[in-house]
Image 1: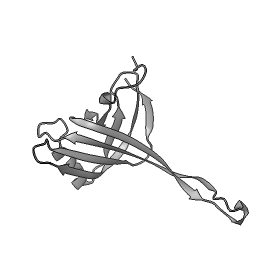
Image 2: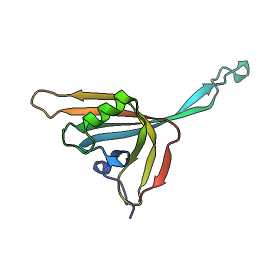
Image 3: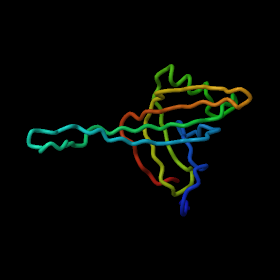
Image 4: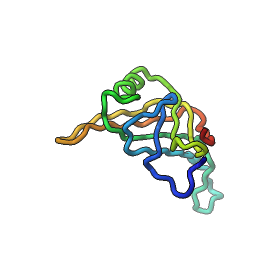
Length: 136
């Protein structure tokens, strides 16, 4: 059954090829529509635009753990091989909408502060269509 009311952000995750990237703390999806400037002398001093290319990105922050199902080392292999893969942004709750497509890693960062758990962040850029689907 789909979630009711306001969703708890703890439910949101990013999946790579159907496997949750574990130890996540923060996730986001961004969908963009680039504008094409069509301003002319007939525009009376106002900028006019029309819709151009659409794009989408996913990003997340994760706790570093060598034994994660999808670990930093796995993502490192993906970014160095320039491999595309299925990527999904979802709550994982049956019936909730999820967003999926094919993506590539655009950035990967590993960090560690004094007396704190190590973390890493990853950004994924979509290639092609982003699809919205009811979860199952």
